[in-house]
Length: 508
Image (cartoon, rainbow, N blue to C red):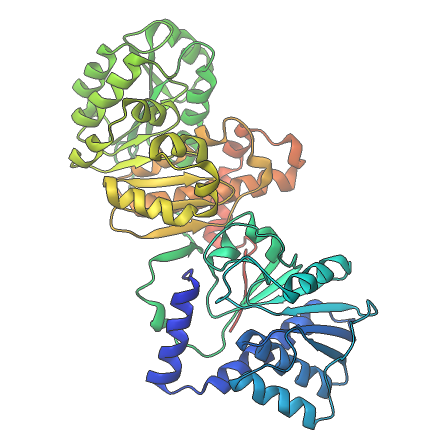
C-alpha cells in the first residue's frame, strides 16, 4: 500500500479522469457510497447525523453521503460552512439534494445529533485554518459527539505529521484509494482515529512511481530441511561499557531468538566475565579495553571479520573520543554488512564527518531514534517527527546507507530512495532497551545473507509485533525490553499465519 501526498493524489485523480476516462462524478459518487458504508458499519445505531460541508470535492463527497442516507431513512442534516459557493460536481450534488427536498440548515446547528461528519477540507488544504472555518472546526470539537472525517480531518496537512491547531479531532477517518502522510505519522495520526482506506475505482497502477509504502503482510524466512547452524549466520555484536552491559546482553538474546545459527558478543575484556555469566547460548569475544573499548579493539574486529556474516556495533558502547576512532576504523575496514546503533551512531555523529559512509562498498545500516538522528542530521527534533519519511529518504540517498529511523512509527529508507513505514508497535515499547532488542533482531536477519531491505522489513515488523503481543499479555506500563525477546516466537507465528490485526481497514 503506497502513501501519497496531496499533489500526488491530485495528479492521480486527474490521470484517472482525463487519461483513462473515469467520470469525476462517478469517483465522487463512489466516495460518498463508501462513506455511507463505513458509517453504517461502524455506527449501526446512529440515526441522526450532522454533516459540515465545504465547497470543494470533499464537500461533494459529503453531499453524496447525505443523499444516500436521506434515501435510506436517516435524519441526515447538512450545514454549508461557506454558504452555497460550490462549483462543479459538488454543486451538482447540492442541486440534486435540493430537488429531493433536502435543504441545508440555515441556522447554527444544535448538538442534538448522534454523529458528526467533517467534510470541510480535503487533501488539497494547506494549514492554518482561517476565517469562518476556524469557528466551525472548534465547534465540531466542542460537541462531544463521535466524529467521522472525510479524507482527512479538516485543518491537517495531508503531507505532514504535524497536529495543526485548530483541526478536527476525528474518531474515524475514511480516506480514498491511498493513505496520506497525515494518516501514517504521529501526532497527526492521533487526530485521524481509526482509518479506513476505501477503493473508489482509481487504478492502483497510477501510483506505481510512488516510493513510500506501508509495511504490511511481511512473511518470515523459511528454513530448508537440511539446514545447519553454519549456514544460518554467525553475527558479532560489539559494544558495552561499565554501567551499560545490559544493552548488549539484550541484543544478543534477541539475535539468538530471531534465528541466528551463532551469536558472539565483542566486549571489553575486563567486562567479559559478566557476559560469560549472563549469556548461555551466545559466545563472547574479549576485546582490548577495561571500562570501555580501546581503539585497538577495532583492529582486532577487522582481523577476525571473516568469521562473521554481519556485525552490529554501538549498544552500550558510550560516547568518547576513542569511540569515534573505533567507529571510523570499522566503517573503513569491515567488508561485511555493518549495523550501527546507539552510541555507534552518536560516535559517528560526534566525528562531524559522514562522508565515510559514502566510501563503504558494503551495506551500512543505521538505526537511530529521533534524538540520535537529530545529532546525525542536524535537523530539529520537531521537524524530524513531522517529516519522518522525507528526512529518512533524503538522508539515505545522500549518504548511501540504509536507515531505520525509530519514533512512534518506524521508517526504513534505502540508498535508492524507497521508504517503508511500519505501523506496528505499542506505547508499551517506550522503554530503555527496546532499541537494543531491535539491533539484535536486525543484525541476526542481516547475517542470514538475504537482501538487506528484506532483512530490515522482516525485523522491524517482527519487533513491532512483539511489542503488541507483550502489551496484550501484560499491562502497558509493565512491559520491559526482554519481554519483547520472549514474544519473538509468537510474533513469528502470527506473521506466518497473518493472524495479526490490520492497522488500516480497507474497503475494496
